[in-house]
Image (cartoon, rainbow, N blue to C red; front, side):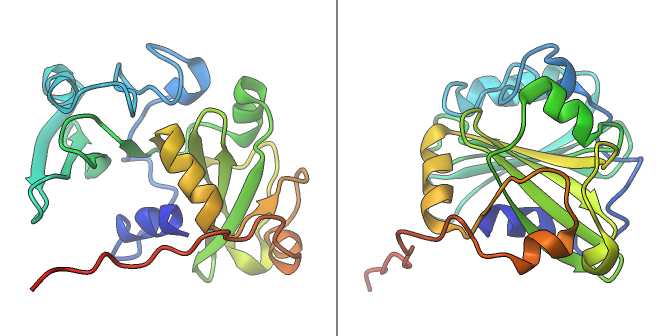
Amino acid sequence: MGFVLLFLASCAPPPNLRDETLLNDRSLITGEPCAAPCFRGITPGETSWQNAVTIIEDDTDFKNLQTQTAENGTSLQAAWQEGDNQVCCQMASEDGETVSLVFLRTAPNMSLGELIEAHGEPTYLVGSEFTADQGIISLVYPDVPMVIYVFVAGAETGELSASSEIIGALYFTPAEMELLLQTTDLHAWDGYKSYQEYNSGEFEVTPSITLTPTPTSE
């Protein structure tokens, strides 16, 4: 569930998930200027950190790029905003040299129907209740690799349809996708259904490995 937690952590305190002031970008659907998992010329696992930082700094759509180095001195993080709006976008590097993930919170200007037309049906999904009337269904595309976040109107009444709004995307490396599949409970995609229908069923994918904290030397 780490990829869901990434989305939820970036949303504190609880806002309206359908936020028009977030990233106004449809490249996930159009494939322009590059196709997922590429964003504005940045592809996890391929683009160097320095080149990625330069791309964001040079893009006139973006402002206020903030970078941070982890305490271990290896991993790097960055966040930025579109225009004068709130922070919408993040990227990270595990090794400090190459981008390992790009995370985008988007305005609700893309639909699930458009996503499926552009990329086909997802392979897996998992739901997460955010507030009483807001939920997220995370759609997993192992071959891309990416996770797409779709808004549903809560766990009780929310359901997926062609008009369901996309509110975020997570692009990462094939290795990170393999790790996700080995460590996360997931339902198999079975078409447009309600949150409850998916949530009440058994998981078709269950963790095959368990991540444990790395011990620190004293």
